[in-house]
Image 1 (cartoon, helix red, strand yellow):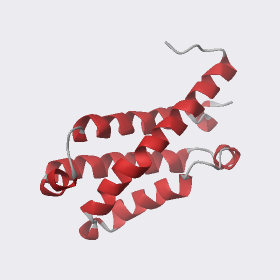
Image 2: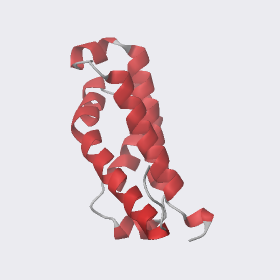
Image 3: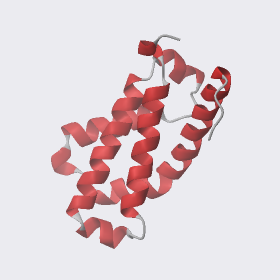
Image 4: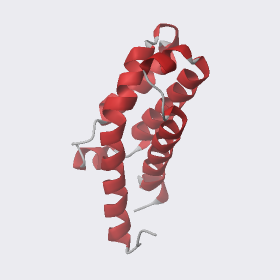
Length: 123
């Protein structure tokens, strides 16, 4: 697998962004989030990174792992980038609490499988 076609760095960016979001919204509820513009901005930026990383993962790899919502990740990124003026913090919050926990598990599993294929053991 060439470096240009290697999905691992992009999967790492997704995992890192999910962890960043989790750390910074821990203990928050929807009310806290909708009143905290810096938190909204940080989450939006990290969701943009997730979407951009997903977009850069080779199409063949995405097709082989079609159970992940690649197009939703890219779609959210596009909305956040191009329609920033109409972002609903409630929808962003729903993504954080409903979608990210599942995505975190899926990305961790993919990364573990790729590492196992390379003979790398998790620390």
